Length: 377
Image (cartoon, rainbow, N blue to C red; front, side):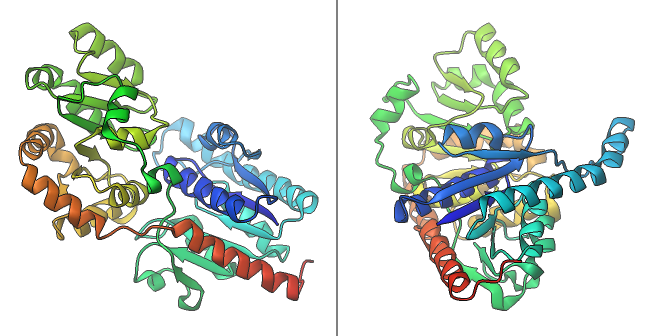
């Protein structure tokens, strides 16, 4: 089997893509899988690190802030789209895939639209409860659309929808790591409480600021923090922790590759409310304080967080209130074992294991249909 998987930009697109690729490889060890991403974006580093080849496109997104620099970038965008589509045409002709999978992000639009025009079967994977613009644009020509939430027919043709859940990394879905192993990996004391603070793969300024402005508070309460900052605030966080002498309590990381060990070590998690983060949290069953990003389409992270909070599976703190309310609520959770247990049980009830395998089922069905009735132009 030959498959192209396209998309990326953030971990919320990249990790599902890798989970699908890994599930496909488990079932078809000789499968030939090629990724197509956007030059300069996170996938160009993470995908090769996971052992897969990737081709980069000169594609970018529309810049919504009207600065002079962004206006120039937007004027260049049509030329980048045309160049990317031309490159994709060549990739498709050379690789001759059996299936093309799109997970959202800049690169998936030229890749999937060209694949559809050339007659290749295409599958979309939509992570969020509010569909992204790229997938909505591609839906009409797609053969199958795998979703994680019910009610997605308001965005997509109902006859193409398959409810699969969101695929997550296998090490998190299986979660064999123990708390002792997690604490050892992050150089933490297992006898002291641990909070995992993660603002998504690119970081979250409000969550980062909350931690950095309360380093002495955390040290005084003897609370350890695994602190993923993202690239933009990593050096500031590193220097601030060192200057205040709290490195024993706060472990700063730009990006955490072993999230299974981070989840294993933590007793409470502070997180954004992206779809993939929530899918992982449901599987690992950790008490979580969700701080939805206000900078997403239709405020869908708030909807994600509220869906869990209403079931007693999470605590939601608005981004604007995070700085003052976040850590006190997290510490209150650490001190309430009964509530932590109730929340962990409630969030586990929302888990959707084996989502990647269900998506591979759909890939296999599309490939079988294609092989029975080839329609490549």
